[in-house]
Image (cartoon, rainbow, N blue to C red):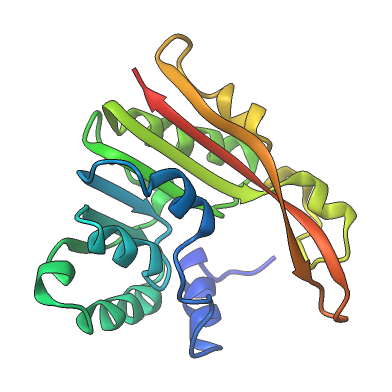
Amino acid sequence: MQDRTDEELWDERYRSRTALWSGAANRHLVAEVAELAPGTALDVGSGEGADAIWLARRGWTVTAVDISSVALERAAGHAAAEPAAIRERIIWRHQDMTDWDPGDDGFDLVTAQYLHLPAGPRDELYRRLASAVAPGGTLLVVGHHPSDLQTTMPRPPRPELFFTGGDLVALLEPGSWRVITAAAVPHEATDPEGRAVTVHDTVLCARRR
């Protein structure tokens, strides 16, 4: 469709607004991770840094990865307002996640929020992210549920970008994981015409044995 790279497209999107996201940590991250003991975390698609900063405030050491240098600069700016003990817990890494291998068994938490790719690249990426979880660690993946395409919320008209909890569970090595949550979680939203809409987030939270 265009000759520009994904990085250029995301940089342009971030430049188009002073804040693309709310600045609050993702509700599912808070719900699934708040009670975990802090350790090392990998935040994939870290955007403007709200999730990474929330984790660092709670004592996690975070590697925050994003394809957009504009987003990372903005995130680092937000982190600069935090006490040194918090901002020094975050490493900001500029990386295209689709061609990056984070290694095996390296993180107590791997989290990816609303990272939508076609099924082939997505499955390959999420298998690599699962491999990056240390024994006893947690994998948390959140995305828009396919049923959102039947609502009036603006979603790309590409069904292959969306996934269910079952799609994600099928990528995990059998017998190696305990699934904590694999659900379509509803919440209320407002569409561009101001109408109330119920949409659903796919949430997978799994603990590596």
